[in-house]
Length: 164
Image (tube, rainbow, N blue to C red):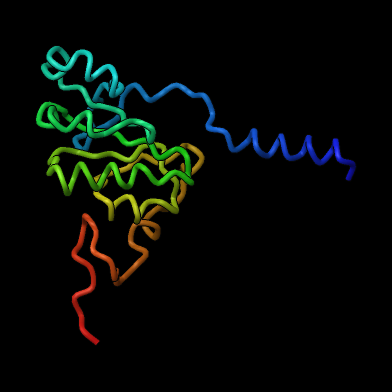
């Protein structure tokens, strides 16, 4: 392969890894199958007094600082964490902070989820998920119940308690 062809191939590969510019979800179904309007973290912070009365949810991108929501968590109807980028683990940390450290008791929905992430999402504190459309028709049951014993403590269990 010539040097210019290699460079073109590398550029195409790198271009595919760049996060796609796509619009954020504007609503999500909650556990009661009701459509909840979603606003960005920035919109929430700028209009918290107005939006907290409307029963909206907040969509959190991996690059968002979830700490900005800490003082107003009691007013947020639900939080949707975006797991679109398979290789970006910040959503797990965000879910853990919300559910364990700050005791957020409402729904934490993992949106744009990949099958291989489901168990880890649930272990980190995500309460429900919405798979990417490309996984429509797949049976996700095996992906949510994959480990019979977990050695590490997590948001949804206390880890291995057996002694050997």
